[in-house]
Image (cartoon, rainbow, N blue to C red; front, top):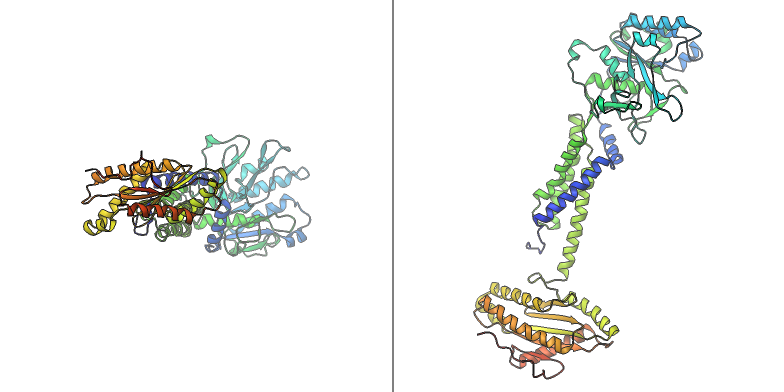
Length: 563
């Protein structure tokens, strides 16, 4: 107990609190219950981390202008072959043709051959791989380009990873049906145009599984990275498909560029929701992924084990460094740990491109706070109704319990007894032996009295100074007097062990209400017992007096201390 009366937490209590906190943290981390709040915090931070647009990335859009000039969609694949040849002549690094071409053109097989030849001449063309159910509720199938095109082009999956709120925050660099064998469209494009110096760069991303862990009929993913979108996310150099096709764009605008070709026209391009932004055409999603890979600023989510370990450290810190249990001092380590959690998540995301979801740690810290506040409330309530020196009930608690027991006595016609105890010559003991010896004597008395009055409804209280009271429900007068005699003997025994410098005795006053008295109040009960106590003092102290008059001859009025 500290100077403010608060009880410091025991090691066992802190260990139990830590075990409960770790269990809660494990549940939160594994179940991802806090994902929505984590996503909100991520969106708020990553919105300030927008990387610059790499000017080597060029978007060639099949826009409304191109549809107007080239006619109804789908176009002949001869047109795509012509576009690729123009881009090859301009000296582009690589081309991602983000168009699904899973079936041959039966009406113009020559166009498929021309497109395959154009792809072969370029050498760095990437075509998308997708997946969809073969039939409703059936296993999925991969949609690959026609065999002729697939033999000449590089392949990359066009899967767009959406979170539970349908926002595209990440990309899986590898995916595939049954096993993640296809690189993403942007990764395949990046690798097709990388220089020799880039070949040793380690692939970023969070690994979820090994190939042996996959399910043969499900689309599986690996190497997850979070995408820091540019500001604006569609701020890449933008060219119209028809302008490039008609050579209205100078070769210098395309030389050495990575080119992504895809739909942006209304009705042909499905919008993708991204953090803190409106919908974005899928073409620009791929451009942002490529921009992330080129600049090397991909954000890697922390592994679940890493999340749990870091969150555990941040959660346990307040329990390790907290020693005093006053509410003022408790908030220092708790608030510090909460702020540190948010700071670490922000620093890791901003400078190291690692994402640590902080909310499971914050929720656990909040749970610890709630548990500790409940403990503080319980202790405060206890202290408000107890004596700090002896741990007995105080006058407020006695009054509250007396009111309840008086009503119970009136309803059931059961007797209710009250003993008032006063230490004889206590001031003299304090003056001669010091207050420390006086405090030891008070604690000894409290222990002795509690040893006698130990039934569940018996209440022992300290009224202040050297006065004590014992409330005894359903106790007749003779039983209360016998209990007083037992206390005299026990106090005499304990005082001899304590080796006090002077005799230690008490005077006791007893009052018993026979029951059924609806006029009785706590004050009248106390007054009657106090009157009996006064009579005991007048009789020479170290004895018991009852408000019913003379004690039975079988009970000794004077109990002499042991010699």
